[in-house]
Length: 289
Image (cartoon, rainbow, N blue to C red; front, side, top):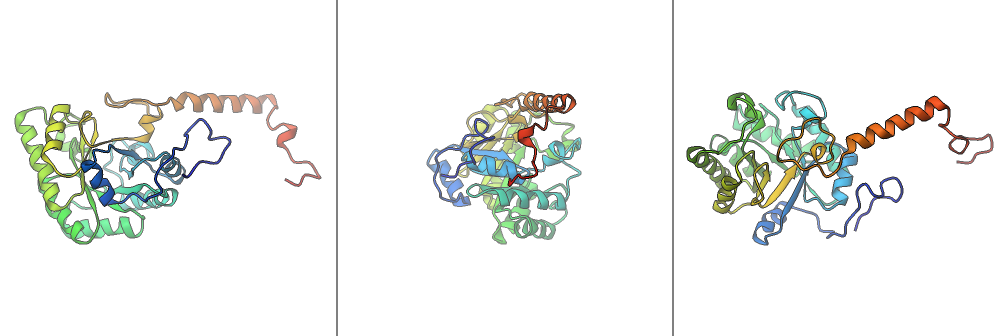
């Protein structure tokens, strides 16, 4: 068991007893057969990676959602390979057990199969990722196949695809009609046949996601896709209550925005009042510490 140091982190994230075995792609695939839920959260930096890893999270997803939550972009489209590599490397340094999966950003794989393989390789070689994720099914099957042939595991992503926000006309639920469901199933099957080891299903009605999950033999990871996927993923800022907007499918497990505002306000008051730093928090001439 790996625990956080005692002190300031107590009561924030409590470490849990867990296997010391490193999580690998075969272990993730096996969780579907063993009917073990797969726990996935996004991570973008070293400290959060270490905290989430200590809590037994199976997969740390370095999502291109960092464009929204870290850089303040309106979408994921401006995210670059250099951004993804830098954040992936930080997350990889912070974890001991979890599998690190990194998003291929917009236009890093859409142009050609050669670009897809090269950029996937960069995320692994320079960013420390152990697998990559890309959006699309039938249209991206060739890219998935070529990346897998280069011995890089691939996670697929169907349904609401943030990189296709302009084509979709916004962040809209997908797969509501029988025709749309059939397209999603075809996309999921194509990604599986091309060699994807798992598929994220985003923004899809619960019943549709359940039928897609039943039809596949690889794990599905849901986000806004109901309870019947083999695993769940959330953006960590949403889970912790750090986001200004909370989608319908998000449950806030904390409200850290209020905690941060309170802590910073108290700091400001202490500085204004001259009570910080105190004598105990200051160095004397004979101090050895």
